[in-house]
Length: 501
Image 1 (cartoon, helix red, strand yellow):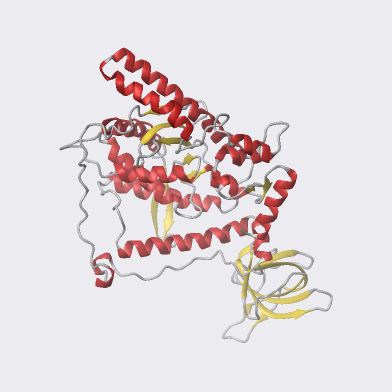
Image 2: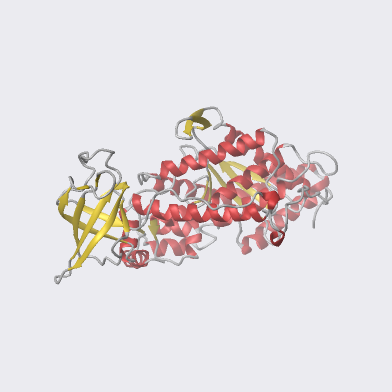
């Protein structure tokens, strides 16, 4: 936890309300996101119990699995969920745009927009990841077939779960993570995983402090858990008898329908409060303006969505159960590069985030006291424009002479430290030589060189391109890493079409 976030948490406790730790929204929010609130049966491995799904507050659809241990009902639930998710995905596959590549010598096409899934918390993302893994290999023929939409749903859920691992991606978001990225509550990181408690700090009811609202939200009788886990008392006292009543009424259609209605009512009561909180949280996020670089990261999500859609349309196979050595190394490198870019872009977009780097000595802010925008360096084969400026700051400058710095106001420009002169009054004079971002001529365009009196932020964090590493082709995997990958075989489904009790 950074110093500023710790301070914001202390201020939240003192004031009784969550404190902002961002001035802009660092995540993309779709105009029509698909909200999915899942519930799973306790004591079973990823056994779906119910879900509330919809793309608008008044479009909630309740899906129920009366007997989650029954294989047929579980995959009927998957098919019903696919009937909602897959048409939603198709809504974004109508329009494409041309994107120049290879410096404008060629173009590729991608969809102009992409779908976005929202779940209450990180456990919801884990549920979708496991549910996708359990469905994407299912067969649609032979023994124990499933509906054709089930494996397709599994592949798409796996796609979204993999995008959720990508720092800065907005394709699949846990709302608790999205909210606490922008506000600091007065509770622990573990307590921040509870959506009702987080919203209690952000938007407490009238007359209550954030701590009081969060404590009230912890009471399952007042506010059920946001899933996928349910309250143990609810499981034992209400859910188990309702499932048992449905199971006993197998031979009586009238009693079975009544038992189903009772069970559905119980689960709706559990999901409806979280459904309302999800849209309240979305509304709070919409109050923040999007950061400058959010659109670029969303373009990456649109690229990934387009690529996966084309892979599915071309008859490509499902994602492997586990990566080979080369694929795993590539994935790790991609995530590391995305994590670095995500941290830098947030700092460039948001002065509050950059303030954390100023405290750690990675950036400083000062005032330009001298500027020579017409300076030309003629020591090389040809003269080049190399303006110099002097910045005076009261903050520490741990960067050495010769280090290259960047300014969020002019990200395409480099500032090389020429001199650092500490002053006796706590001020430090830094002389910098500028290059880039000023055209190709020997005269700097207006505004490209900081002027005297301008306050600028300088940092060693770079938002530039990060080159990738070199890896062998998968078929050339060394024997030390398992050798070339074999042919992946989809696992068989050994489960009979009967209860797993």
